[in-house]
Length: 393
Image (tube, rainbow, N blue to C red):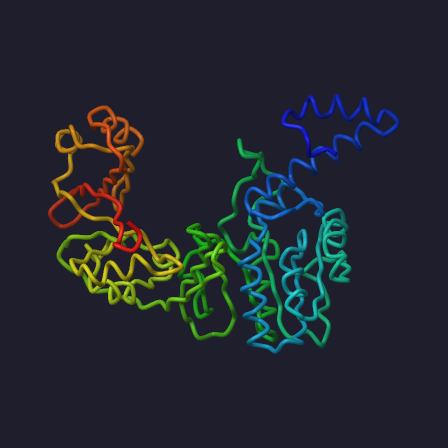
């Protein structure tokens, strides 16, 4: 009932008229839940009408496809009947994925109200969330693996315009802290979900997989195996496809060719670009810039048709030494439906550049992409179009 209104104020007024016998606070809470459900549905693309939610819980919620991947990983590594302890259950999204994969699940949550919501959300799985603090919880002896998604925002800090509090970048200030997580890993395997921007030096010998879902870099999964492997996982939730690319360290450079390839952000974070360079028969445009180039038509065409997509392919129309004046002159009169500005290795006012180019372009049917970066010869700008292979054109 509370979901059928576009205007929150009108919704409150109407619902109070219809259900005057109810506590007004209850009506406000129902409306708040409806708004949170719609917000989560817009992110996930699936119904959340049966879930109880919080604003903070949505901010840290794992996407269903990512949670399923993690559950499958644990099942394959520890067996389909492994016992997983979710030490930071939150609203229960990861625990649900574990249970749906057939794993045995125990779950704890430090906040009693959130724990009650999670128990409701996990009712279909037959799980009851225990109210407990991960820093002092006595781990059952039959647990095979720990999952932890430490809180990385300060709940007491002021909220920004998006209703979120300030991020905590120091792992020792996470909840539970990194010291607690590391101590647990000394006697049990640990799978930890952390922000994708995590300091690579901090990860150390833990394995790390940067995960991209539908083109968005969403998280980094680190596991306490001790081998120090790095990889990128690319997920397509619509086509139900995935691909893992191993990290490779140093990637060769190549002179600028006909094409520019912008890799998925997960590949960049995982330093997993050597395989991409091999697939396009190319290399990096610069050893410090994570863009690739190639002149191999066949290799680029085949790369552009891969699913899930590993990056965006651009066809370079012109290269110039970058300055605002030269770029405006170079774009003047070029037909374009719109203009996108991409930068690497330079701090620029992207929106100001875009507006200056919009004024001088001619009307057109396809988008123009301007890629600006710095190399040994100074700032460079590439005027490009999005590449369409014969199969997609």
